[in-house]
Image (tube, rainbow, N blue to C red; front, side):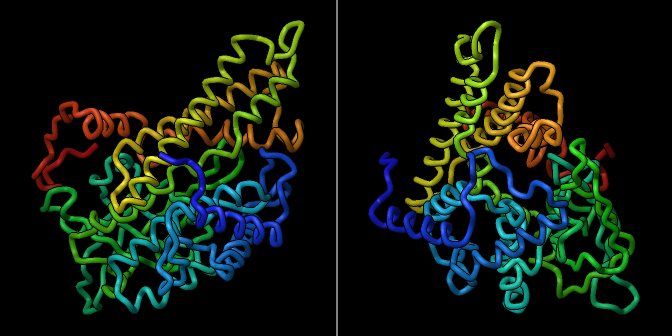
Length: 412
């Protein structure tokens, strides 16, 4: 495998650098975090403005077809742009679900009229979409969704939605959402699901932000009380909701590797050079250098896994299931970095960024957020099961619910 840019990739990288340098401030240090001093709503507005600027320049959705407003570029070009953007102090990640999961599902499963109405606005950041999947009793096993969509009996062509979703990212700022609901409880759990999209201001939709330990509220609970959804807002066929959801999840997996802050191990090395450890600096201690080496090896291994996925894409194949390993390693690596940074500060490690200064912002965010990454998108245990079965070829877990109507399954 050749890890160097091709001639075309090198030219694209130079174009990205030139555009970014003309449109955004460069980070003063690798661990600088965007938006310090701004509240959540202000950061969201800044993200909309940045997304609009990227879209106008052709960087808003590089791999999308040109007919849908994208660049028609390659996955490698998307990675190159993200690598270069990581050196600039701009809001990133706010549209990962909207443009990376939901809208690609609309490409495949929605009507031409729906695509014409919604894709352009989403690409330019005027609208944000959320993905309404997880529930209190259906997290890692989305087949256990209990939110119900029942056909209207009052003459209206549509459905009434009732139930609850949880851990919905940025739902408080979203204009639209894609919801997975149960439409037939007499079918096996994955066969009785249907997908819809809805305006988040529809009567009966209630969004309750979940206050996190960091004081922020990235996630939300969303409640549906007799929410009317026209049948024209059904995405895909009745009973094909799981197929629509898999499209979104497959697109989510293609973004593996983008969660690692650039040069994280260098940030850790700088902290070791500055922190005292006994009579010397922490970097002089072999045990500390061992932790730094582990951090470096994990980060480099994640990059190699990403390269493997990109190589598969470049040859027209799907990335293999071994990319699931990347999620486990990335979440654990980010958590380990936060532990290490706090340990290096001794008693002062418990202080907040508001007391320690800007350089502590990244540590604080990872301390609070990395543990959640080990749950989001499938817990470590679920992902390890997938790796065991699909990569290592181990016997699968017993499936006592296979082919059983959902209505006959025991409630959790």
